[in-house]
Length: 439
Image (cartoon, one colour):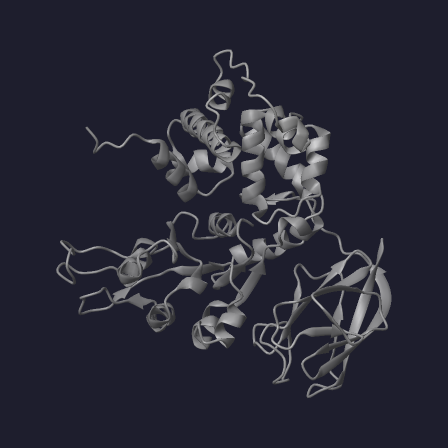
């Protein structure tokens, strides 16, 4: 089926005469700005490092401002997002782009696959990414995985590792937001005995633990600025120096980094080192938000139902329709929690969301419990947010117990079956285990 193409020509600014094409062949958004990591690099000092993005949206080109300093304008009107049809003039800083419709071309064949490892999605936005991910998995290049909270960045990193020649090696995750600032260096590079108060013995850092495998540095945009040169040195030299150590330790590690932040903006504002950015951003994968993944809400919701042991048809069509009209700021993670909540409390959740205010007022009514956990929690007269949380905890506890029992306690296989990262399942398991220190 033929699809549109767009030709952008710089008609004003330092890069006058430069032209580029946007079509449906691109697996992800086309980034425009002054950063070397952008697909279209401008030399305009009034443009931001990552100024705007372009992508195909049906027959039109979608233009999105990426929080630029001076704004993005279409025919003189400042826009956050706009759909282009051809004939417009787009201004970024002091650069003006003439938008022209190109000849229609045959739409590329997109693989029918509905997932890459633990990353699932049958939408065109996701299926375009899978061939790129397959190629990246076979390389040893650093990859920066970008995306909003809950889009599945850690799952993609684990899938890249599992499909790579390093699959038999360790996959280690270091979350820059989880460690205390004073311990980040020790967590990354390890320490020797006596290196600081409390260092009772030698300890390997995540680089050494990932030797022969893959290290995901999660939320790298939150790494303290003073530690960024040491991380850069470790990556460039493939060696680390433990805190309190005298000799460097050689490591063989592939680096993946994930971030919810705009690293171009962080670099521009001096919160992230330019040289480290260039070293890790050799390749970039941007996971689209759920609101841009047409058709994936129903697909994923039914998948989560099956993973929980329920029928894929357990969700009413009216509920799916309501979910498809929602923006999902928490993305896939929020949808997974919504499915779990609905499976736990069912029509009660829908009724509460849809009932008019007048229906909720009046005398107290006792929900018939009949010995079930839903009725018992409802009769506690808690605010609905607290009641939902209690029900969700019951569901998660039972689900974790079930999936671990099904897979004979093997956390790796259980996490794969649950569609979550191994580390996430371990956290859930630990949350529900009794405190062995209590008496």
